[in-house]
Length: 92
Image 1 (cartoon, rainbow, N blue to C red):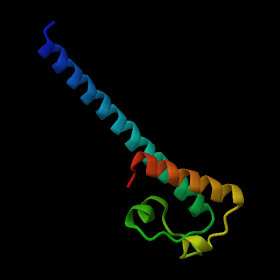
Image 2: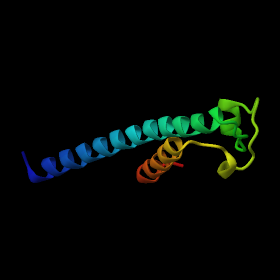
Image 3: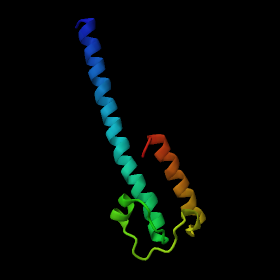
Image 4: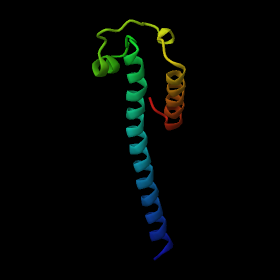
């Protein structure tokens, strides 16, 4: 193979790998978002965004301020871990 052919193949491969990583991150972002917000929903948080309200609803919500939601230490640790992972993946 010529150098040009090898270079083109390497670029194509890198593009495919990048696209696959993006798809994994996007799927992971969705899963992390659902897990994090499920914790808040279970504890009575009143969601503000249309996305969260559409997904979880606000029936039975009690807390308008996220910091006021009574989470256990384990839940707070998991939420912090999820947020760190969301930052790592560049989730929005």
